[in-house]
Structures are given as structure tokens and as C-alpha cells.
Image (cartoon, rainbow, N blue to C red; front, side, top):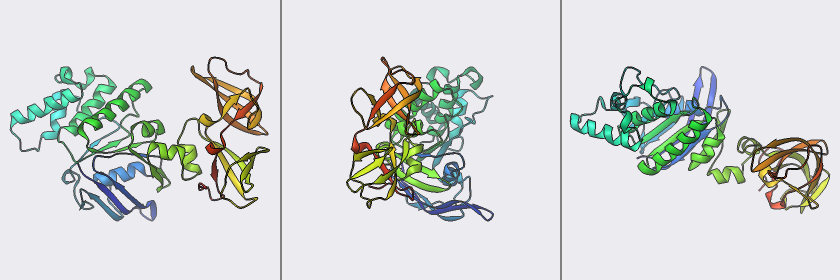
Length: 349
């Protein structure tokens, strides 16, 4: 296991800088997920850590050693790619063992290590099959096994689940999480899927346009987003955003006044954020009144899209007894669950 540190890390292609002075410390044995939209720089960052991209500026250190000029094979890392990158003509046993081809180990020890990894990934009965005889999830396990067999200090995962269907993605998320709990090795995982980030990470690194927007636990980035981008990127459905105005000890939003300490000067324009999880259709008098425009049944609950004074918001409603389409309804939200953002998009704490 090892720590990983980025110090003022930059990457440029010609005169175009795509990463702008990243600073991050990843703890020994930590599971960190980089997440963000396409083109935000997350995969480029991972490839720089792996040694597959040159560093334009700054430093990368692994286990306290600066690795900027080390070859990938000398960094004590193992990488799992999106497209599996396993050899179709080799058996599972040989694919996993390929990671030991340069290891100075007796053949019996190599075989024992392959068997251990196969058992850890529940692949023992498939060791003598070829990839064509495996499912997508099993092929991805082979790719993970080839990375595991060398017992690296750091695992790097580059969107490894994006080629799997929804059910397999869910299954593999759980398996990778269990794997981390067993081996407790440092993992850096890149994805564009915020559900993967929320369900797997110890900490999430949210990126946009080559900048880190926020680093925190899943609970921190969900409940205390640093800015509007994070607030909307994390969470499904996205946070509702409404224009508002600070009133000292309250906030005015959608024609209603809600008691809420704002920390902003009287009359200051603010953006009010409300998670759909915190906005509920209610029978009693609520914080807002609006008319339902769309209903999305999800079984245990229903998502209600409600027009309140010309602004559409998403709220939660009962799944068994949902309101009717077009109904005039009351929406309630606890004042402490309002998120406030200033004109610069940053959270007002």
C-alpha cells in the first residue's frame, strides 16, 4: 500500500493547458474516486499517475517517492482499463498469470498466487476457460485479477464498468468494494457516473474543466456541496435551483418567505438549492404551492415535477398513493435543508 500526492500538477498539449495546478493527498489504503463530465481531466490525471502521460508541471509522488520520470513498470501500480485488455487466445489462468511474467518467483509460487487471486474473485472454476466463454462481468474480473496478482501498492481503475449493463455494473460495484475491504490497497477509480462515485468511494474528487471543484466524503459532497456545479452534478435527480433574495434572518424564494439564517446582507440575490429528497408533496400547508406537470412512478416513490410560479421543481411523493397529474399541491421543505449560493456560485455557509 502507499500514499499518492499531487502537487501543483499541470498538463498541457502544446499551448493548451487542460489541468490547472491540481493538489491532492490520497491516504494509504484509501478508495478515492475521480468523477466529472467528459473532458474534465479525470482520465488524464489517472494516466499521469500511471506514467502513461507526461507531466507538464508539478509533481506526482507514490509512497513518498517522486515518480514523474519513472516508467509505469517502476511505479508499483496496476491499472484496469475500460475495455478489459485481456488476451482472447489465453486461458483465464494465463491472463491472470501474465502480470507475473517478470516476477522472479518459482513457478509453484506463481501458480499458488494465481489460485489465490482466482479464489478471491470467485473465478476458480473458470481458470481454464478462455475469455470468449465468459460473461462481461467475468472478463472484467479477469482484468482485475491480472492487476491484483502482482500485489501492487496502488490500483488504478479507468472507467472499468462503463461497458457493462446496469445489472452487471451494480454487481461489479459491490465486488470491487468488497475487494477493497479485503486487500485494503490504495485505489484510484475514475468514472463519469456519480452513482458509482457515491456508492464506492471513501472520498470523491469532483472535477470540471481541469480544476478540482470539491474533495470530500460522499455525505459531504451531497449534503454540503461547495458550489452550484457540485450541487447539480451530485445527486439524481439534480438539485432544484431557484432565484431568491436574502432577508437577514430569512430568504424569499418563489414568492414565499422561509425562516433561514442566510449569512448574506439584506436584499442580496442568492440561488436557493433544494434536493428533491428534501422536497415533499404534503396534504398540509407547505412551503410552496404548485401544479403537477409530470409524474414518474418509481415503485416505492413517485417523482413529481411541479410548476411553482413559473419554475419547475422535482419533489418526492408517495409511490402507493401518488397525487394526480395536473393537481394543485403543497410542497414542504425544512428550512435547514435549503442550500444557499452566492452570485459567484459558491455555497454560503
